[in-house]
Length: 140
Image (cartoon, rainbow, N blue to C red):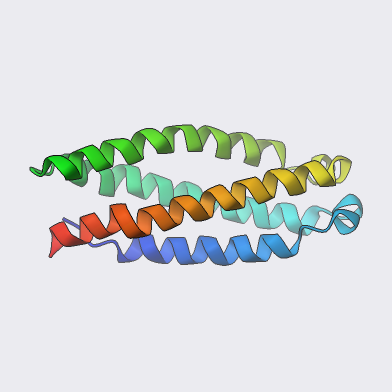
């Protein structure tokens, strides 16, 4: 079983990006110049996609092969939950990748972004304390 250090480091980087993105949530600024914010969103999307792919290709297959029933059930639960989250992420990143879209509706962007960042933080906290701890225990 692999240890989760790489995934945890990804989470740290994503939370740093989320903190930076939070600093951009000013409607008056977004209404006139959303390009820097959209650049950050694109970077965050790239990091998140690589992270999710690594989990799908490396972490979940190992957890699903575990002889421990709780490990398999936990992995299945997380994987199912992530399927819905991926659709939300894709919709968000598609809609708000364009500075023009953000400038047209800065308040909508701010609301959507705050929701996304809250969901991302909750998911990261849950993975760090449940899924990754489980994987690390199996690796020990």
